[in-house]
Image (cartoon, rainbow, N blue to C red; front, side, top):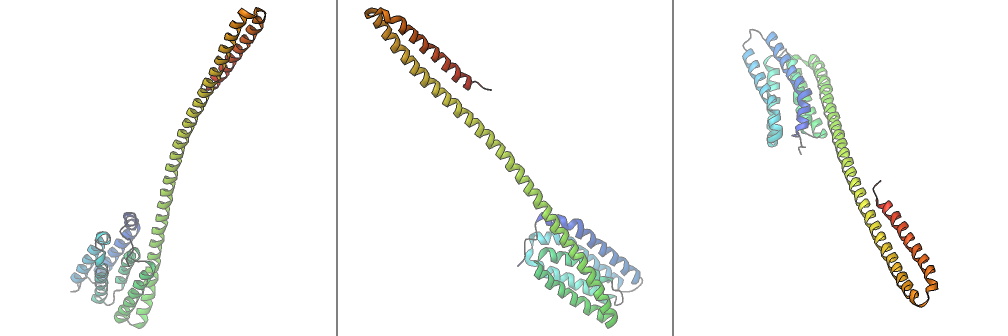
Length: 264
């Protein structure tokens, strides 16, 4: 089961670290091959294999994103090239470093358990080829050395990828929190505006109800005063005082309600 290795952010992170290390390793191996194999008949074959390996390394992004079905063939082809480089010049051992770029790709494409299986497979091949070409003692010594270097670089690259992924997730979470905060501010402003409108409507209703009630009372008092003016004029002054009190109270209540309604 291949995980989602084609995520653009993972490829960018790998290109900044793993890619530079990979091509530095290829350059170093090529330089050593040129020095050790200068004037030999196998040098053109060695250079040709390194060129093919470099091309495959450069195509890793495209293959990772689009052609996952060819992973197995792609990786095995690189293994064949690396082993061939080890056999072309038997006593030159730097070819084993080429397993490091391959380890970067394996760690990026497969889950951890499968990556370790591939790593064990690489270690067996590397050790067997070094023993075959340099002898038991030298082969074991070289294999332990190169396996340790490979584990260090691949583990560092994997840790870097994970830390970058965590940093990007933190940035995404921060952006989401900021967007949520802005939305909450907008909702708060809208809620405040709605509350203001509701308060204004309440005051309007109270003003309307109060004014209607007071006007009704003033109307009744006016009608009663008019009747008393004909039947009992002596009570008219008292009724007029009562009417003045109602009018003053109505004005005071209206000023109070209008003052609450006024902004600020």
